[in-house]
Image (cartoon, rainbow, N blue to C red; front, top):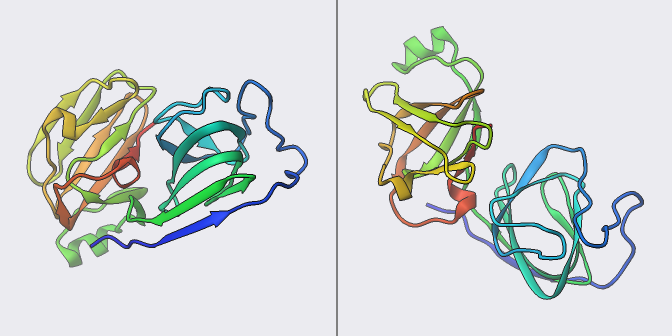
Length: 216
């Protein structure tokens, strides 16, 4: 079951922190980690499009009448922002002179892999590195550096090889539904991610933040 809260903020005009001022005609891109995805809307003057991944510290200004929906990959925070200047933080945005509506949702969680001993005790498979636990059956895999994405069911024997379109593989578009309670190896040209589908995962519609898993 999804956790849902909604908060509305109205921000006054103020000064941005030094070094994070918006650049006219485009977004001020920072060198931090990619922390948020653009779920809906575009910021024309900042050249920001849907499904762009934004780095911590990025700043941009929305033109009058523009709005954008950002989804934070770590905090599972969805923000609908209208107008104003936006600075992307690690887990949330700082908005000056605009309005922000907040939703809290379930999105992919990073879990520690089981050791071999733990795997034998729990009758599951041991993995090296982290495991992405998801709550949907048809995720979106962002694979911007791969020409092909391979999906292997670790216990089901399922296998698919798909070509990313615009840097992503959308299983809903491909007509593929992963099985609840099962684990899959998702392999791009450079990186491999283990995805664990929640036992209660449904096949209903969801926005990008609930569905996205970054591969490369």
